Amino acid sequence: MTASVITRARVPEGLSHLRDLMSAYAARTSVRTVAALGNAPLAPSEERADAIDAADLVIRVNSFVLDEPETPRAQGKRADVVVWNRITRPTRHTFDRYRDRLYLLAEPMRAHGNPEMWPASWPADLGMVPLPNRDVLAPIGESLGVPWREERLAPTTGLTAAWLAVTLFPEAEVLLSGYSFVDNPTQTGWTYQGGGWSPVAREHRIEAEAQLVRSWLAEGRATLWR
Image (cartoon, rainbow, N blue to C red; front, side, top):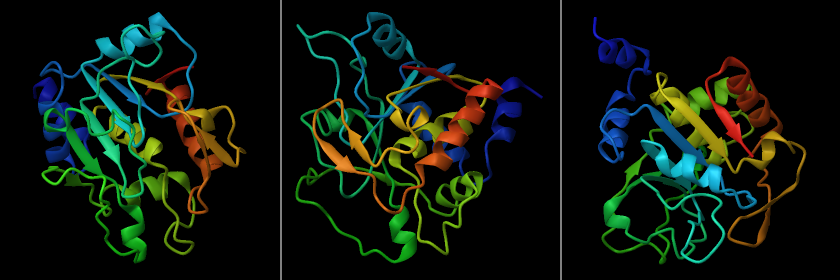
């Protein structure tokens, strides 16, 4: 068997097509490095920004921001794949150059009966791919060890992006950054690189998410850049 066949066999059944789709938007066709970014504030770091921009595939979430000219570099300037949800508050970067990116719609609360809605902020011709809850929400919920069905729970979009990186690209070096819950799993609110604050939603269990990410770090499945 070739390396590509072995790798494909390690990707969960039902998600190999998503790996192929995400790879099509990567900077290089052979994805050896993946950067998945949460939106927690990051101090300026040329080294971190360079590492993110050098990744073959860069995944960002929700109200992300990018480095801009004449400002201190912190989180890089690339976004190949965007994982976002229906209540995202767009920044000026969220839908910038949206025709050049892959948008994956995370809608875990639809599995719990929440109605579909189409925010006015979405571009009228936005092409997107909904993440299948059977193949994404369910395995993440089981990995977290929480009663996600009974209590109508959902993973954060940031964890979903990280899970996609380590699950769909098991052979790649995965770089994580902007994940405040790893160091502060008892926080009750989020602060953002783009500014502002919001409470942690009741459907999230970020202590369990922190434990899962720490297990990836311990196993060498990912590296966290603070």
